[in-house]
Image 1 (cartoon, rainbow, N blue to C red):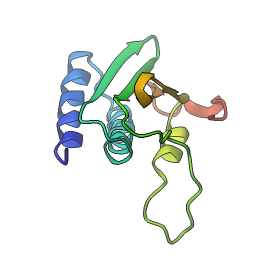
Image 2 (cartoon, one colour):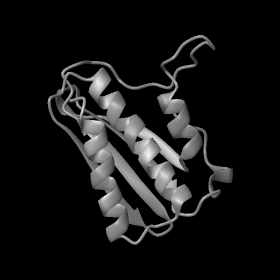
Image 3 (cartoon, rainbow, N blue to C red):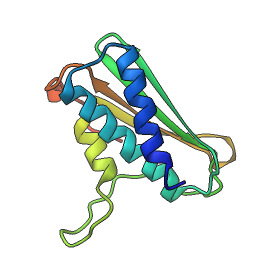
Image 4 (cartoon, rainbow, N blue to C red):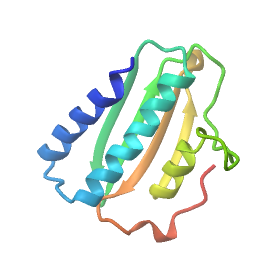
Length: 130
């Protein structure tokens, strides 16, 4: 599982290339959010299979990361103290995305998704995350 995040980033870069999404700010944002969501799925589920889906729709890029569960844990945004090294991933996703959310699936599976702007700096009027 430790190689999963780098492999996802390589595949995402190839997908971004194929979609002709070349803006460095956009690419960085997509890879950052994808890395956070995949890392959370690895760390907080008992799933041996995690899938990721990227989809372009208009001026947004949608990322979904799904795990098969195995734990009743549902991802929630936390407010860690300044001395804590972990717990800021979903806050980072929320600040980067136009929208984000999560769905609990059958068997305690979970899908966490984020919609990102394809143009940097577009996130000004995003709704408050759940």
